[in-house]
Image 1 (cartoon, chains in turn blue, brown):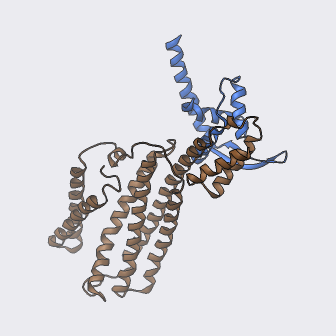
Image 2 (cartoon, one colour; image 1 turned 45 degrees about the horizontal axis):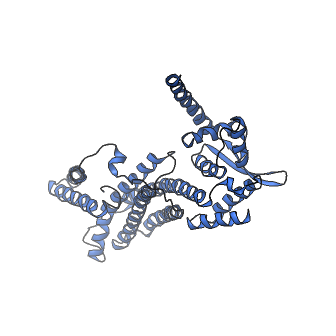
Image 3 (tube, helix red, strand yellow; image 1 turned 90 degrees about the vertical axis):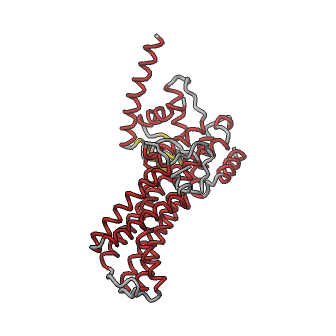
Length: 99
Length: 273
């Protein structure tokens, strides 16, 4: 899953800006629990994507709690589209071989 | 949860992640842990700290290479302005002849070394852009190239200042090396900060041929490069002085300087393994 973590994170955050815990939850819910990430490991990946300019983040107070919320940048959206295409090509090829 | 956060703080500090960055990581971890019934689900603190340190080290090192290159470019403009504004005194008429000649040699040699080192650092930084985390060895190569470039650029600025004084030029010329020194100090600070988070990930450092995309014997490459620079030096000297003898002196000096730098700095700049 590590090789596709960027795609998962970008896709989850593309729907709406999310904080770290919500990112993990969004991926778990969207995959019906099949993709259950080791929770703390999303942060190094989020920092990496932010460092690469694909995500931006800011502190927001939600119901009295200060949370770091991540959102997709324009570059992030472009990368997401590219990664989606690559994933479709890859998964289609695997499907064709294993069908 | 408190114990886990203390452990994470300790692990981050052990890997050089401190201050505002560590505060942010801990604040996000605290917020996340409040949602979890089992702290174990968050993952081992040392592993998370290692990944964060490796990530920060990569991002900061690459950014510092860009910042250093900007400082080098600024120094380059200051150097060109210096050459345009400085007079053409008799090189043997310095206040202290040996010091004046050393500053003159520095003005010729140091900018070239700084430019090549800076370009090599930038080349590796561009290669590593957006490619996850780099190995500790590879980051060391980028930092070494950046450090050498900044240090030698500082020697260029020093040469400008000494040359101005030795050849009794207008004091206003000193503004140029002073401005360059400020830019270089800012670049050096970013390199120092980039070296704080410790990336422990292993991997090959690679050399200049990995950067360039082809591979030949390093010494043969250095020789060809030195001869090429020597020919340019010869042509430049001949055109500037109108005398092929001056061209031979300049060309010979440039060739010898390239080979000497390759011998002295080759391993540090990962020009050879």
